[in-house]
Image: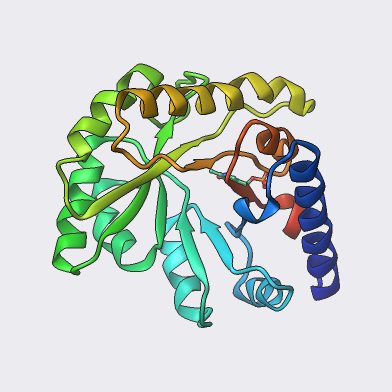
Amino acid sequence: MQYQQIEQNSTAIKKRIETAAMNCGRNPDHIKLIAVTKTVTPDRIENAIQAGLNNFGENYIQEAIHKIQMVIHQDIFWHYIGHLQTNKAKIAVSHFHLIHSVDSVKLARALNQYASQLNKIQSILLQVNISDEQSKSGFSMNQVESAIHDILQFPHVKIQGLMTMPPYFDDPEHARPFLKNLRQLRDHLLHELPQVCLDELSMGMSSDFEVAIEEGATMLRIGTAIFGERE
Ligand SMILES: *Cc1c(COP(=O)(O)O)cnc(C)c1O
């Protein structure tokens, strides 16, 4: 895909985000567009930066590190959105602004340990397996509260919110109940644990981001609608 197409797609997506936000009375500035760049080459990422994008999401640690080292710009934020093994915690802490996919207390403990060594506070989201699918990682809904209690003891990680990935549907309306569930879970947790920051809801992808905005998403993870179908 060429630069112009990436630029056009980015502009169109931003417009759609703005319209969806306005239509439900939300401020579009409170919704962050994260361009998902798994399988996208560094020169295409450069194109996306030229087109004005500055938040990028990666799923695979080796691929991500390689690209992060090649794409050197000011004010670029890298998000880790894939499953993270504990033995990759160290490298993740040294490269990512926000890790969306924390799915165990064990992983949070490892992130805390390496963040402490790097003298950093690592921002994280807790991934919730809202659809309870075997194939997906994440805490089940009823595990999240106790996980938060445990993770609050780690001074070098900071919980910022929740992330989920509903099943794929052709009709985004079918994703709505899952997206709504994440928001309701967040509201419930805030009621129980008012001292915790759960501002961020990372949900909404190419197929369902407008519905996600209506349900309260603050971070959208969008790949194919910007870069085209992946190989
Ligand atoms: C690939 C991926 C996305 C983006 O999906 P698209 O359908 O290409 O927008 C979002 N979140 C996660 C966790 C992903 O792996």
